[in-house]
Picture 1 (cartoon, each protein chain N blue to C red):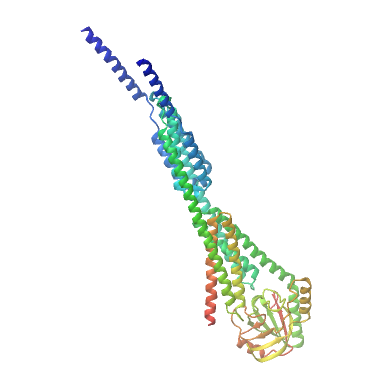
Picture 2 (tube, rainbow over the protein chains, first blue to last red):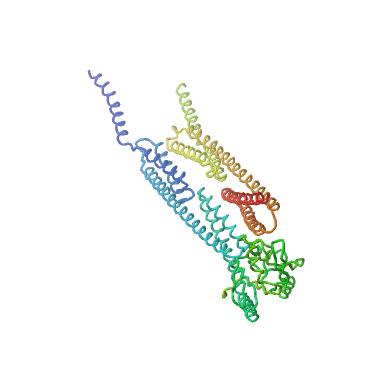
Length: 363
Length: 196
């Protein structure tokens, strides 16, 4: 009996102790924050896919760092004896990583939305400015240097639009900046042309007034051409009899410098020859180059403004074959054949023809 | 005698166990270097998925090693973490290779576009020389010249972006420029058609 009790005691105590210890381990152990880790990982992946490494780099990098530390802390505790495990630090780090990753995702989206909105607004601004410049350019004589800058600006706008579609906002903004710079050059080219006009407007006004004075004094006909509005006025005794639409040289925003430059000359001329038949229906030959033209040509050659091989040109006429509503001649002034008939009823050899870039105070 | 032998065997067994549980420092270093290399090779940009898998595998290997570090010396086993470091290194190398291949693909694509765009510009210049000349076309020709000059400048910018590794910016500029030049060539073709 005693021996049985002893045997029972010898088995029951260790078994009971073992059960007690197991129960202690089971109830006292700390659970690993695996769910928090999985959620933090998912949040980091989402942030990475959204571009957080680029648009919210600080928060994203901090989130990654916290996740690594939290994972290491978790792993360390996993290796310890069950009763000694404490996942508090791991839990805190991983939860922090998840919060930072979520913050990075929100920040990324906000940044992308902001960049997208900014880029699109800037593109719209550039498009508007381009359209305004286009309108201004179309309303003036063709300014080729301004046109070149406009073409550059338009190309930059096209590239910017393509970059926005690819979500390359920084490059899109760079392209927009280039477009705006080119547009500024358009405005500067137009301002330069306007300044040049301002500097010469007094001269043109004088030419117009002198021509009118001469017509008034002699009771004779004269022709005054305003290049800026493509109009020619037939005056008699200082009064406008009729006005005509005309086509000019293809480069008529300029004064004529040399043969082949496409500019209609500005100055006071006279009809020298009346041609009843011509390649362009009928024609009136002018005495270009006059003395002023010759002087200017010589000065420009001397200064190197034009090539020393340039020629001054000649054969500037008023002729028919016009009415094309575009500047197409090499410097001549073209009218419709019907208008040419009307002009030639009144104009003869010796009739003054005054050509100005702009006549702002007359008619 | 038997007792002494048993003790000696036990000590040897212990030493063997302890010896087998050396931390995989070499494998860890190899995997870390491979991932850094992949990052420098722009794998996050050009092979983001492969890079991410490699990075995750390295992190998991680090965690396994850390777990083993925490165990009592006699119970440590770095076998799993060692295998994972080796796998991480292979994945990092794979990401670097994929990134290189993708970068090269993009580079070749844009290089090809640059050549084609230049050829198109040259064709446009040739077409322009054949464009009908005479009264009525000079202004249009001059305007076409300004468009081609702008396109040529854009091509030069795209070349600079390409040389600087900014392939997406180069591509967008080339697409815009090509569109413009094709439009110009259509204009010239129309003018030649009308002349006939």
